[in-house]
Amino acid sequence: MNNRDVVFPPHRHALYERNRYSPAVRSNGFLFVSGQVGSRDDGSPEPDLRQQVRLAFQNLNAILHAAGASFDDVVDVTVFMVDPQSQFETMWEVVPEFWGEAPYPNITAVGVTWLYGFQFEIKVIVKLPESAAA
Image 1 (cartoon, rainbow, N blue to C red):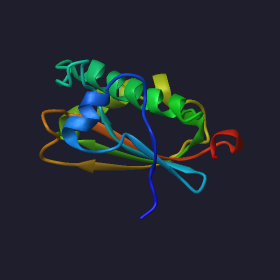
Image 2: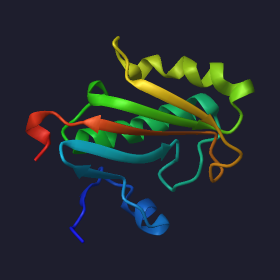
Image 3: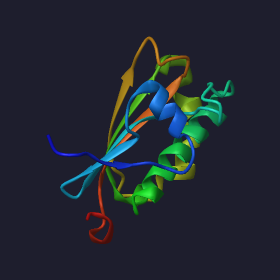
């Protein structure tokens, strides 16, 4: 098996080690980012929903930056929400702060029953810029 080209953001290494997964893996010019949640520094969920979504995007952006990419390079988005019917609009108020301008990436939104104590999770696939794809 080949070694994985793992991308780690600054800090948060203990979270990934404790839960036994990589934050992102670079492969063939793409970056596959694991689901990011709005966790505090100690790994616990941020209780305020808007701030939890902001933290999830901030955590995502830290990984993108570590890989030499930005949200503009994102081509595929999947979001998971515990209670989309009552919380979708609140969550979506935060998205424009990070999403950027059109054309937007594609998105799949999935309602789930459990996210390890979180209400929102975002995972993405990125087409890395030429300079970051190596």
